[in-house]
Every structure is written in structure tokens, then in C-alpha cells.
Image: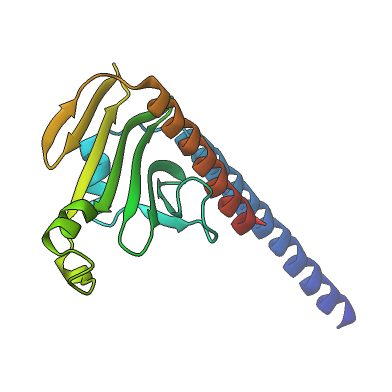
Length: 195
């Protein structure tokens, strides 16, 4: 009887080893499949916008305030960062950076400055005659649209009117440096999550 139990335990042990071996082989294959999928996918800007609108991208937020971006979120498609959205906001104003990424860097940057038109307000409602009313303050947006690939295209817009198309390389470099900094910040979140 003891021999039967011993043989039964031995058979059970061997079958477990065989099952573990199959599980390991399956895991090994899935790692290979994952690695083969790790090629960088190239998206058009319109495709990234569509993925954002349809909620297909995974959002990761930087838990602290980004040094150059403010409130920072990265949007990922299969662990690939494809879009950055960062907003610095104050009581009456904010700046926002939207950055589209490809395997070679940034493909498009949109920078928006949203500020109160205080001079207009003060002319219409002089502070020596009226109490300040934030509801009566008008706002204006200055938007910089910078297409980086295949060629650099620069537009500065104010109230939907193009103010300039002259490329401001200093401003572009500032945005790109900030974008790289934000990528580093978002990567630190991914690294902490994987630990």
C-alpha cells in the first residue's frame, strides 16, 4: 500500500512538473510575442485625437506638479507614450501644452495662453469706481501651433487670427526641452509603478 501511495505521489509530482514546464513555455512565447509587438507604432495626429476622444489611450498622471508643465498627464497606447497634456493654472489664467509624439520626437506642439484682458476691464470698470467682478472680465487666448514633422510650420494665433508664421526657434527649443523634461517625469511614474 505504501508503494502505491509513493507511486501515486511520484506520478502527481511528475505531472505537475510537466504542467509547470508547459506554463513556462507559454509564458516564454508570450514574452516573445510582446517583444515583437514593441515596435514603435506611428500615429497621425488625427489618429491620436480619435484615440483620445474614444477613450482608448491609457492615462497616467504625474503625481507632483511638473516643473515646466504644471498638472501633467501622459496618454499611452500599449505602453507607448503618444500624447502629453499639461496645464499650469492660476486664479484667472492658465497655460496649456499639448504635445504629440512619434518614434523620433515631437510631431506637433500646441501651446495655449489663456489670460484675462485686464486693460479692457479697467477701462470699462475703473477700479476706483467699481468693485472688482471676475464675472465681467473677458479673456483672450494666444495659441502657438507648431508642426514639427516633416517640416517645421509655426503659427501664432490670437482670437483666431494668425499673428505670425515666422518660426521662433528659441520658443520651439524651450517647448521641446520642456517636453523632454515631462517625458522624464512621466517615465519616473511608470518606473515606480513597475517596482
